Image (tube, rainbow, N blue to C red):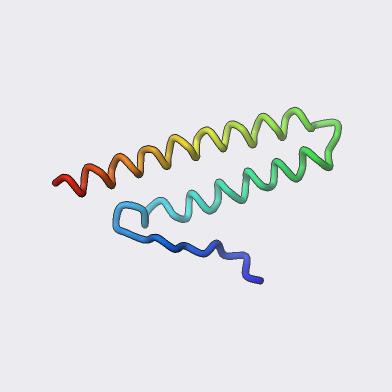
Length: 73
């Protein structure tokens, strides 16, 4: 199985952000995994995963807004 994330929807608005989104998802997964294994630092890893997830949500909302603006123009 490949480590690359498959990208189904590509357009000129999303393209510049795809690698960042893939990296964020890997970082979120890493911190979630560490939270289950590193009991001393579980709270830290949960917090980092949540911070990254909130950033990812904001980023995706920004991309959707840019897509809508480009469609309207």
